[in-house]
Length: 237
Image 1: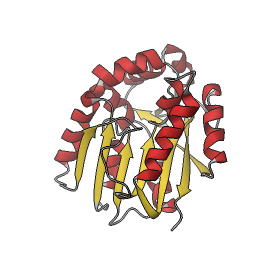
Image 2 (image 1 turned 90 degrees about the vertical axis):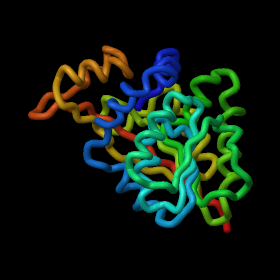
Image 3 (image 1 turned 30 degrees about the horizontal axis):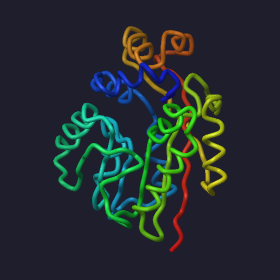
Image 4 (image 1 turned 45 degrees about the vertical axis):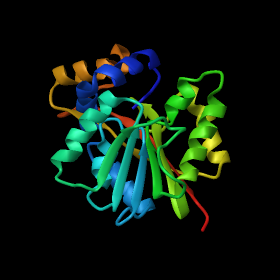
């Protein structure tokens, strides 16, 4: 995911959840995100809060073993898809609700893990002049809802169309703030695999723009390379 075409992304999140869900269903062809999350944190039997759940990809990944998943997003349109997908799993340990990252409808210390995948970034790119203040509010809210001994996990793009990390220029300062706050950092490949060239052209241009089509690889399968960063902050006991 690469949140650099922000006016279009506002439109996507408000009105095009199904197309967005198709895009992310093609992402991370080797399931590296799930493996890395299990490597850095234990989710089994724990209460999880997700900020910016979108259509619920991470919520669906974590709900089968978590005690509970509270999934929040600013877009009711996206949450409708997330709820339908979660309902289809047969699980009942989840809830979705519309909420701003900076004002979660939860009491203090309500969860063990707060996670945001490709969500906090919009506090940065949609608040060009005040992003540091807005990001600080979002991070403080994540800290507020976490119990001692828990952790905060943030996933963000390190470059779509790249085989090694190439952070988007407009996100470098954001990532520096995470490091200054004490977050540890790792990264994984999260390449997309498409069922056909036609699908790749349609889906990639929909979210990333036509210029990204030059990075689509045809080598027996149709893929688009991508790198994703994972930051984690442990909350002291």
